[in-house]
Image (cartoon, rainbow, N blue to C red; front, side):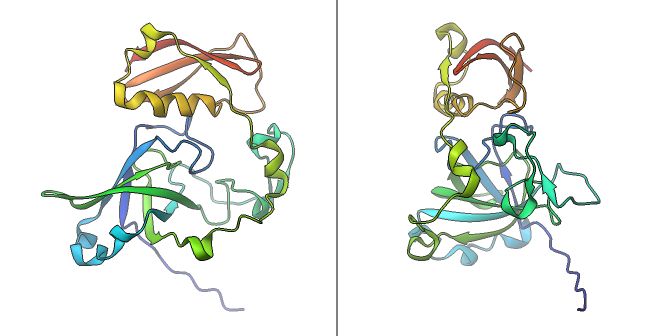
Length: 230
């Protein structure tokens, strides 16, 4: 069979409150209060290209795992939610380490802005992308074809419900802007730690907005220990 290679280029990038991979929700839609903006490249800012988009509530984003720098691929990977020690076939997972580093996420469309400098900007919620991630395409989510309530979730179903109880001292929470607190609480409840590490004495941290959020986890309880300005 003839191999065909095509080059695709980003049409946009996403702006989020999470500048690093650590802390990202592991799937889209898990933290519906996490807001982001999609800013398009100049070539794709023609308002006509967005005509009719306002009628949809959700979108599909096709994007690139821009921080995964690998020239090879592996047939099996270790899904974090299986403890990081069990191997599964790469095509049975949503691992970023794939033959082509392409991601697919469903997000909620919360608004369409017309910015004087940036053109059409999409406001979305529930994204699992880090700040600056390249977007290759945007498509509407169609509930009559894209939603399958009867679908089976394979081995992922047994590890979905893992939300933690979050203890966020009020004096520390007060350092976070009021309109950004709910999203941060949602991120923490999803347990940002690597699943193969379970050390109650260990302090973890990730960047959120302009803060380093540091926390510990003991059993099913996460305690925020420190908020450090970056």
